Length: 610
Image 1 (cartoon, rainbow, N blue to C red):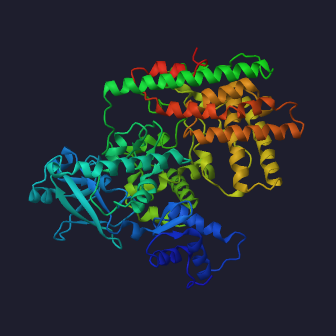
Image 2 (cartoon, rainbow, N blue to C red):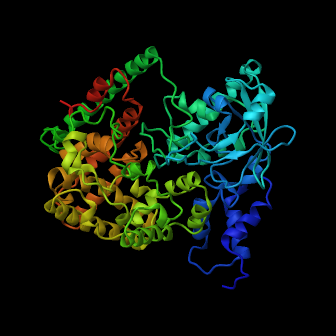
């Protein structure tokens, strides 16, 4: 390819300026191929991949599955509201979190101006003389503007995007007494419902706010009208959602990822005691109805001879009530990749854009290995991402790389070593057998076809015998993957179904020292209805249904190949997939600070909590 031949990225940037409204994705793909022909078997795949990873950076916003919009069209004239905290007004600051995702989340250059066009100074995170952060978060210094317009705590800043080439925001003050509450209530309700809907449909636990909020604003009739409440305020007040580190949205109750050096700007609003009790009463009623269904299904399956009716509780022996309290991962889930590196948030923060030898107290050989690991990590990122990280400010680099963690864990697992928790497991309340990289978050991102293969024994925090058992299951899953491919299933489908079975394989190896060939009704019930909701990271109702389907297909394959004689138990649990989905949905709604948490938990996971 000559140096003059346009790249996919450059063509997408040009095309983003040629459209002035929503456009069918296929039309954009065809336009790229017209300017840069490809002989690839699926020429659309590479372009879609660039849009998936770098769409916003290249000027494109995805409105829906098949519809794109130029980002400049979505942003031009858009209006939103900021309500600084009293401490922000006192400090003369407007933290960057207030204007995300409309500007600042993925933009390296950003301007803010008053009505007369005077620019507000931007202040980045600086380190003071002792190495700690001198500011709570980066943002704009509005001290002089606050004084000039008479801004006080409780007032609003109405923001309008007036230029998109270099994102420029114009601000005006609205006194608290002038807010037109009646004019924004309906808008607030519509916005919140749309956010909840998008987050609940997502296949990953943590979603960058620009992928949720921007498409909603872009298509809303009020996008350029009188601004409603800040979307962050709506989210933090709603029990169905959680805002993590001011950036990510989730429907799960997750600990903070602490991407920034300090606490979040937007903290959850306290829920009144009466509201909590009312919500708990409704949950108890819902749980009791579900438990009746579960008991009836189990009794019917026992009557048909699928199992002996005895509940297995091997996973319960590791944790009676160690899954709630003040620990960082108290509400279920294995340790995430970010949890493993919480120590980088302090004075030893290495950043993500490279390493300076003068800043690290390392021997020469250690530094060389660290730099090599950094280079290998950057090389594994999608095209252009490494360059974006190198050019970004630290807080922006962290956001970028956080979006690719799942993919990196699959591609380069050896760069993310697992902590050895065996020495202090009892004190920490952690379940040592569950601390592996094989949680749901890893398998939700696509990887190249040639990356399916043997499972490294080092990825299991278990003894040699368990690792051997798991390796045998891994071989069976590999055969299943090949079988699906032979049937004509797409590579992504074969990967997804195979990885779903991995969750059950790890459970069997860790708690029962069994291979998948020895799976049965009781252990699969325990895995789906007790282990999965509590111990697998990034659980979702949709995924647990897909696990049931994948496991059923896997055991049908095993029976067809003569490895097992009977696969009826897997079909029976597949028929209960909606019950497994309801368990996950309800557990996500149980908050650890509820005065009735223990009762809710015990009732939901009965009979495993007896």
